[in-house]
Length: 209
Image (cartoon, rainbow, N blue to C red):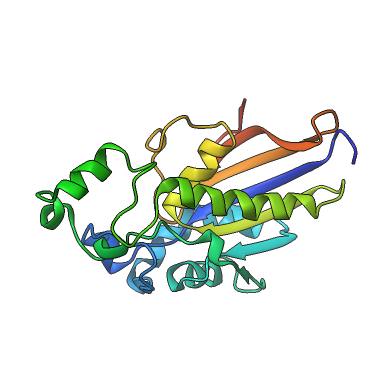
């Protein structure tokens, strides 16, 4: 691969659902979008329409597949379970108010990176499956420049920002529904790996690392 090999990855969070409006924990529960909120995509739709995508991926959950169709109706999306949100287990559909008195919930709030909800998964586990997805994808790439779209979830995007050294902590950057980040990767022939060397919010001005 050449030193100038570039891959641009667009990480877009799905649109709003009823659980999101009610501030309920929404992980693997397969809830659809609220279609009366399609205006939330107006800021990003034009930028994506002006970009030629070589690959389009989405979580297999409805709120992501539906968002993908709304953003780029003429593209085929590859669904991948590794791009799902964090699994909240027994706390799926619950709110802070209903859980705040539970010792297990308070422990999770203090260390949600390593502690998993009952019958759910930790952020460490989520990050491992997201990393597996990217390692598999990058290993299949050649030196040609590519644009890649991922329609996914807030937790997955936060994992990416940490994995690729943009953020240090889970809550360093807000991630709005229907918006996200563009990460640009260059192949480092000495390290023999893809390195994120710039990023931008979608849409905004690009930032260097």
